[in-house]
Length: 100
Ligand SMILES: O=C(O)C(=O)C[C@]1(C(=O)O)C=C[C@@H](O)C=C1
Image 1 (cartoon, helix red, strand yellow):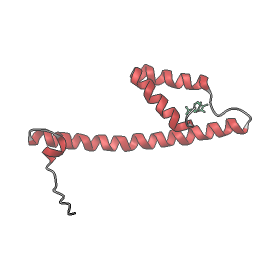
Image 2: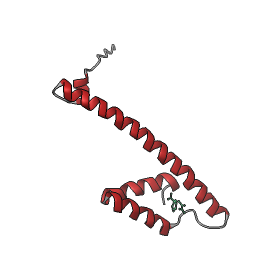
Image 3: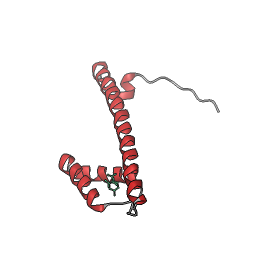
């Protein structure tokens, strides 16, 4: 089987109907990709700090999870971002302490 790869134009890549819109979208997507890289880095930094806390609590004889603190974190995200913020915080907590 032979595969032919044809480079897509910026207009095809973005779904825009004009070159002007395609250029704007291409630039804005570059900024989004850079932000996503920073967000991922921040989440990884948060995961590392969360692990330190959990290990200290477990070593001291406590439990991995602290539900009262999780309620504070969920409330923080909900207050800032609304209902989807709660879902985002739940996913982030799962990344930081695994599934419960
Ligand atoms: O703040 C803590 O006590 C943590 O262990 C950190 C963290 C979090 O990632 O925010 C993780 C697990 C706990 O259940 C609560 C919060």
